[in-house]
Length: 475
Ligand SMILES: Cc1ncc(COP(=O)(O)O)c(C=O)c1O
Image 1: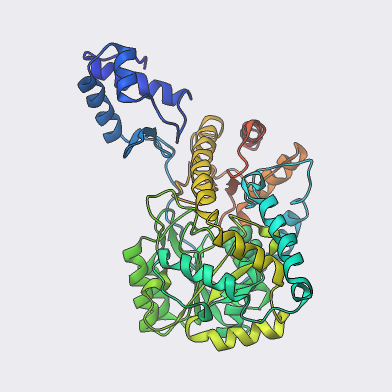
Image 2: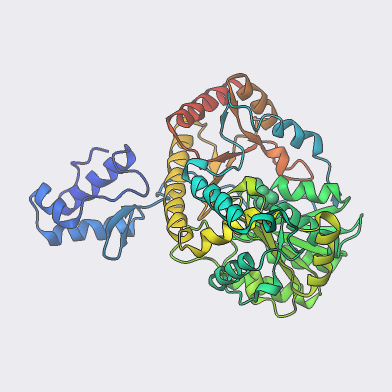
């Protein structure tokens, strides 16, 4: 459709802006000309432009940002359909994906590859120099203290900063209710060890990150995958049915921006989840590792904000938005705090001191919020750009998620695609993706792949195009 179409001036402006968005002049997240600029450019009145912009807003193309102007939406009308709510089997299974994980992991540091799959943040956006300078400066300042053990709970200055940030997620906790861990992985493992024994059953989102599955596998736990909506997360009716029919020893969910779905449990549903699990006294391990990377106006809350029984263990880390290699995470373990503190002490005594102090100082300096604002904006734009390119080069039947946070895209390919075959063919072209098999204990996602938008670039765009070509040869 040409943009000149339309009887009235405002219609012509509507068509023109849509045309410019669809052909990439204005990309998701970009600002479009102000009302005044457009009125001068098109020689029409301000009212006519406003009428056009209101229509574009109503149609889902643009959004007004108060005092700042109009911006192209991150998700555009006519985008791909989303994957359906997942429908995993109803029996608990042992997890056995270790070999697959190790196979994919072996390529993670291969610098010859264009990495489209691995869930690493974009290190170019991270304040690495500042953090490293903090490390050195603090090391000098405290001398011998810097190589001394930290305590199992972790450094108080960091716990104070985390407690302050948690207020925005709806949680009022004091620093002594927080245990610092070596990343979110250790937090999850400690929680599982605190409430489960080998052979127990844990209800999880489906799909779910292999970071969670590997912890479950290592502890000999069984997994019951619960149907999960691509936007609103774990289905509570399905969870309730599962609880009523079999023994569930714990539940594990990535409540905000599930990896790989990008789903976010709406706040009112979070309350329902806390009430449901509370009724049956089932501990919840809540992974909020992507919680700070939201594209909405405000930070989503956590399920823990609604937990009145202390059953929720809230886990997170700085791995997605600050410094994955520093290995600093935390857990707010509720009623399981003593057990978690003991398990932390028996597994590694304490988390390394200097990285904790360097992060605490960074947070206290006030630099974290501006950094997060920048990251959120760039990742939202990158995800939209990735979706557009997937739409352009992948087969018509392809479906993609619409994440409202994080930086991952979950892509459902036509049934004929086996994601492992695609993974191997892509490697031959120096492209790495993450096959769907890694996100389920029951091999539910044969024709799915996870893509990462954090490092979006022209090279990545070329790689997506190449993937599209490979997919067409798999028929
Ligand atoms: C959902 C999820 N949980 C946990 C982890 C592991 O986090 P960490 O590096 O802090 O141990 C990751 C990392 O990719 C993840 O995506």
